[in-house]
Image (tube, rainbow, N blue to C red):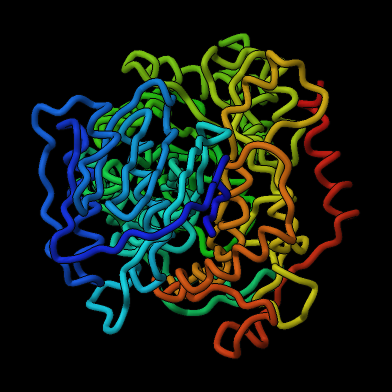
Length: 552
């Protein structure tokens, strides 16, 4: 039983078994990479040679029908559409056809789920019969953006763990990794022309322990960053799995790590700040001088050299305006530029850098606070996180949208009302809550609804300080979100739950330390570390206030 649920699934009579004679054949040279991936993934657990070879002069359709010997055949059929696939299995083999290379890859992922769960192990699995039931599957995704945002600024996630996370995303047919690379608490990507961003901004002397406003520090330095070579490896590894990596550098708020490295970037250049050690919204923001814009143009040039994604994230969220309002020089610049007020200044920041990004053939991606300005650059893509108000407003104004409402898809939110949840913050978001995620808000016209590119789950890491805890917070809730983004039509949580129970054996084989139904295991708890839970009524009241400026 597959997860996400395919569009059509028909069981047939018989089965196909992988043997020493099984070969992997691909009907187009563009599928050589997928064939190599399939071979490298199947060989360790099965111990089979599984040679991969191109079908030669065979036509694409003949390759799709497959040779009548023991083979896994891969082929392109563009008429299926982007990311769509068909998988047919009988006693002679498995035939996978995709509308493009991504579709073929997803067909391979479906084939994996039809094999015993031990296929996900990384070494030879003894005593396993490698058989696949005969089936006919036709499948295609509902949304083109099926993503996860991973915050590597609050707590750094090492490269090896990012690569593992990409594998887990690929297994669930997710196709976009949004990397949050900078914040008040750390700068995580090497920028060669500004080395202090990582030598100074890349680490802090301690971290706040827990979510209480008076929480102590833990007394432990924390840091890390990705070199340019690391980024290229991550991007290439993701591309092999048909995942796009979208980088985000947060401006003009959430920037204290950069200001600590280069004080001239701040509103008060003579003020020496450290990389921030607290969580929450910080009132130290970027100064409004043109030299700050030129600095970030240099950052973005290097970032765009490293990341080939169409979208480049500029943040734009949670930027307090009080420092600008109280500063005489900033007020002078607002008047000189005819910006009106501090909200106009924030839009000026985004517009200046958007123009630079556009000159490189890219588009800006940012949080829904960007909508507070009325002159947002054309082509901007909005991540609607404060509920769905941003999605409605952005789509109504003609902007594309990625839906990521906190009350449905924030994976750092607590998973139940139990006091045993580690560092419980915000509202409780259960597996069923996340399965109910609907990226297209009510009330949009057909044209406006087409602006919803899809959705993503967001993983903020203030309280996720290890790969083991990342597993705990993310899985299996991300499985539910993956299905919500992939599957067309009505969803049934009870039916999903049955398939998920089977899917957990795959996560076990992958070594994922997911949260169990009965709650956190003893070593997944954080006794004595205070959280900051809230009710849904409190959350709704707060977001009604902070989104009033963008509501249409």
